[in-house]
Length: 109
Image (cartoon, rainbow, N blue to C red; front, top):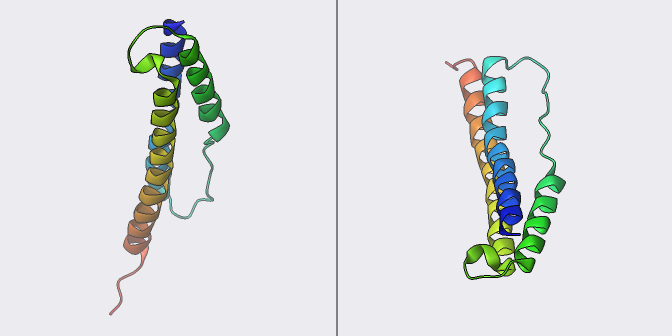
């Protein structure tokens, strides 16, 4: 069952990497073509929540010592990572959007 837990944690981590990349892709799109209509990238929060719950459930059935066998630790670390990626999304999106909008404005005399 530990292999299943590891597999779920790897999938969960890949989803978190996706979350970290989203604001950078959106900023790059805005930078390269600011006049284009905005396009969306799916965040699908339910995917990471389901993966986290499955990993926590799998950690519950594991036996042994180590952090992977402690469901409270797996769940707490997962929630912390999810919150961090969404804070990253907001901060990078706000700062990056502000910087790009400042660069797009004509200089005032």
